[in-house]
Length: 460
Image (cartoon, rainbow, N blue to C red; front, side):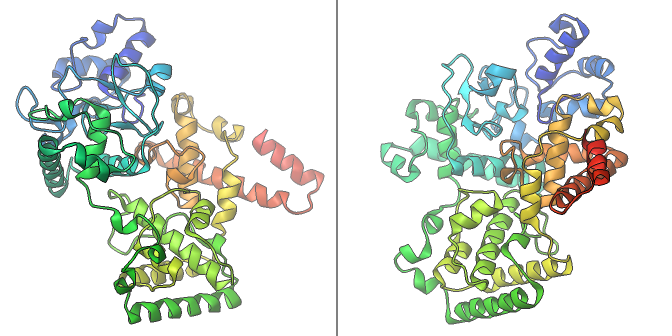
């Protein structure tokens, strides 16, 4: 089966090798994952038992013109010139992995390895990517997926490309100071951004960050920034005091603890947690809730300690977190989000998410009983176990893959896996997660020979 995000050309190579065929018999070498004739898609579909829509989903043809470009030459979109190939100096060299969106300027970093891509044929030097670049790329790739059906997302991508092209034409050495420790821009390369984007991945990464929203407001805590006191009003400070009073009540009467906070809070009603950037805002809100409950239990906690407890160390801060840490206040909109989240935590019975994170983090393989109950056609996929464990993690910890033992696995891969599996497999994986958590609880109480035998039978 195709891997999540795998382009048709990469899958065709694996398919040819598996069937002992010359690679050109499956897909001509000059195809660039776009405008593939129906006959060639049919050939791949017959070999891999894929329907036409599944085969097309492996090409750039599934994306709108804003992404794949216009006309036969595919110009004026995010797609790179067909002579430009970006690869990961880490995983492409070792495993041959490629991603379809690496053929666009939307993804100048490898989200699996968190390093900058390089042009094919360049020295294989692995340079870790800046966290801000990863955040922007995750947002833009999610926006590209949304643009398949959402006209608004397509317009956002059009505008972002124009800003990048305008900045590429005017950027100078004095602009580098705004980028902090972002990669240096190759001026000769960015000046050639025209009908096709710039061909240098590191330069593109910097342009994507510089054309996005400014992050100066969240660059350091509120109590270290001059003039920040005017941001919060007296009503905001009163709202923060009231919310802390309410938390202290639940700490005393309901045994509320910071460990009851999931890594992502539930989005407000009507919002979609899968929309671009939603995971970050909901994780920041969870960090704020973690800090507030710690204060309610008479423990002072820094934002970094809260992020580490939630499994997302190093995410960018924001005004919500800084305002709580400095005791400045809590804005009305943020207060509404936290109040709704608190009500949901109480309604769900105060689940110990910290215990779930600690329990599932050492699990590196599915129990043998689970694998034996699944058909070989499901378990034979090379990435099934990894994605199944990732699925269990996201369902039971309510956290993004950034908080998991596999932080480089994109959340979109897990979402694609969830759409691909059948209801019976989904139910079995849910039962497996429940058993893993239940068995760990069992190990914390005195056990008899019978209970140990049950655990051994289940997990081998």
